[in-house]
Length: 277
Image (cartoon, rainbow, N blue to C red; front, top):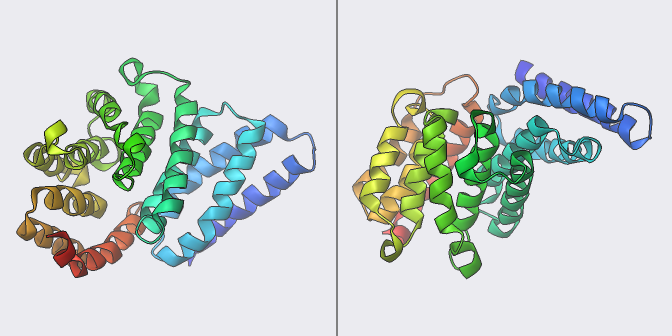
């Protein structure tokens, strides 16, 4: 209940401040800057929720409000990055499986906002301060490509992923629960073998993603099963990873929501294994 009240307080704060913005009062850029701090501090409470349906229903309004705030402070890097994370995370957690077209739109929005935070900088020129927007930009693009593999224009973007992920690995391979390792595993899984895809390299990166801070982040194992194990056509690995997720103990903290969703998705993937192998 405390966590739900925290999310409600965040929504109320955003509503009040955005109302001021829309009415034309003097809050303007100052309000947007202050509110971006509220959002940044409040995001952990969102991802620590134990009720996926509640977040699925509550988050879209907050995403829209974040976009409203960006109209008053369009160059706010932190707000741009958090908005990108919000759209990408929502697409992965709640849209991809049932509505890939809508998920694609959310991924594109996340890609656009994170690109704005990077101010057009190429991945090779990214600095430590660009780590978060570069990660979410690459994350959005990779998952967009994955659910649009039948679109030649989307697949043509695959080569742009590798330099971006290599830069992320250089800056901080442990970022977001070893996220760059998972992204590189996804890259080698998505890419066709005749064009450089490599299930063995994918497995190596996914295994590294399960070390240290990424060991208990269940989404890492879900991506490993969904992409890496399927690309390698390794049904035993697929089942072991998904059964681990399903039987994993519930853990409080900032990964509670993605962990809960990973459990739901793992059960559905297991039910669909005959279609994948």
